[in-house]
Length: 496
Image (cartoon, rainbow, N blue to C red; front, side, top):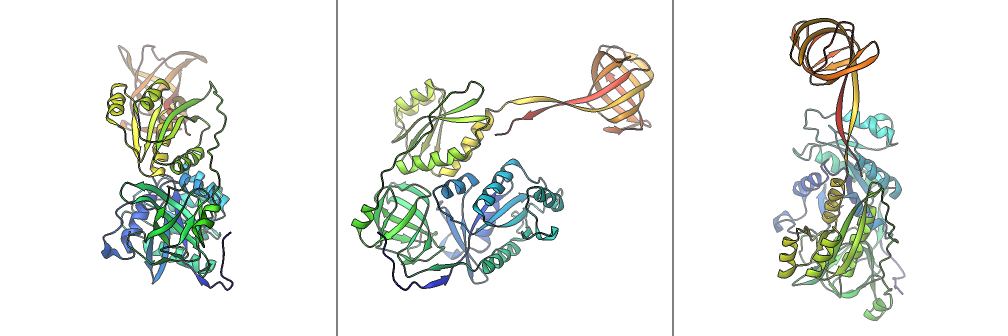
């Protein structure tokens, strides 16, 4: 049982911020811009490896950022029962607007009941249209302040640095309103946000302290692993004596690698920590093959059972309506020739998480053309799997009707070509579009518009009510009185 002191000391704590949004809308660029803009202790040389979180100091106050490359990562951690963040910054490309992954992030933010700030990114681009994005957000029931709502929005450019100060000011203003508090004089607790096996240091874990004060020498445990803190460092790997609420800290001392998202507690003794251990098992859904669905088969090898749990938690969150993930094998250990053969037989992709492949396996993978993807960060792995799933989606040809031409005159007829004059009676006509020829409501042929003119000038588009001349290419001859139905065909990519 966890012991707590009788008289807790309640203090104000820094806000914990997660940045979410569509993959190409600048989440990583924004985090990098903020980190470079005003990171604590710049002179120490910066962050040299991924630790999952970092802090900056703005207006002499700290802000902690959870560095999750995808919203799947944040959702997986929350799925283990951790609130984790106080504020979500929703990043949207102001020139592109809301995408499907943006909607996924919005759903996650609502489900987590997080206070939200909208960051309208890429304002340096000529096509930036913040009002368009605000309108789209209103349809998702997110009403920004300038539209009469309560959600703050800030126009920024991660590329140029525009608006970064305004965004940080807004985060601190929101945090002040939230009046975030925590106890310090209690045994610490928090969440595992990154964990891996360092070949020299052993299990290395990044935690976010949520309550209490974490100190070097503390006995620490999760449901799956225990240990004693041998080394406590900040996010810059600089040794520290203690970590306070909302601080990220890097711990060396766990006996094994814990699972990302697990809650940790400090205990009064090693025996008490060990008594808290629970039996771990990975529960997998019973696999039922559906011939109407596409599948991405995976063979996964990881450095620890905790890593495999974390990977599977994240992969479960990826959309699987159109492409399903099928895990053929998921085991701890380096890649062997047997793993490669299994991947070959099952037409699977091999995922290696912080493990190596022996020489025989390497040669076998090359000879059998089995692709092996290697990762050291779980959520980079998840993003690659998403990309591999998207590659399996088909592109379907879709017809888009554009307009109609009433043929008034034939000016020239050559082999497979005619110059035709007419009136645009519906929609519009586009250069390069296809057309169908209708004579007395019967389709008699088809072809393409090679060139398009109006008033003897070249145009790409001529709209309804205007006369036009077209250079038509096709086998069937067009006659006066015919109706030309103009259309184009586009390949539409399925979405996950």
